[in-house]
Image (cartoon, rainbow over all chains, first blue to last red; front, side):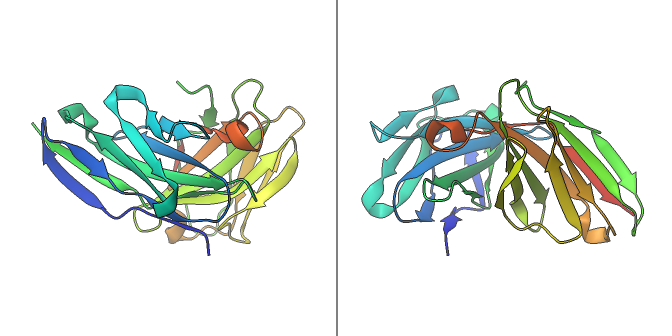
Length: 113
Length: 115
């Protein structure tokens, strides 16, 4: 079955630490990939997206993600996190075969000031 | 502000009751999606409509139904409510389907509490 796995359910970091959140998917064929962020009490907002082209994608707020097709991965990175990055992060994948979007279970990121 | 609106923001009701959640997509978007977010299940895709027609179905219970109207707004109907239906219900919209038309914009959500 198609699935999206986010390996880290809860991550705690200090400010200025580097961040990498893992996302792996199990789809065949062409996929579109997304990272969404949900700040406390708010709705989901798009951080970045990959449709085609350069596999290194830059998003808002200093985030980036790299699509590695051979590893079925789309990991999210940020070199230096801030307290305001405290949020829940969701990876999502759409297969061009059926247009169904599947979200990972999310990673709660807590940044210590 | 994503441009997607949802009403009401909060809803408190009793078990066995029926409620309707409403969503207005971004101007020009043809696709509407419904999601349920709870602490134990995470974010679950329920159903998608595209230009008035059901496009894709996820983990939607038979007690739940949805529709998209000619003006493209959508309603999610939840009936015979159970305590476990308490959750945040999000609506999202996208320009269409396929490729970049799949990028979804989320509304602020409706928090449903079933007592």
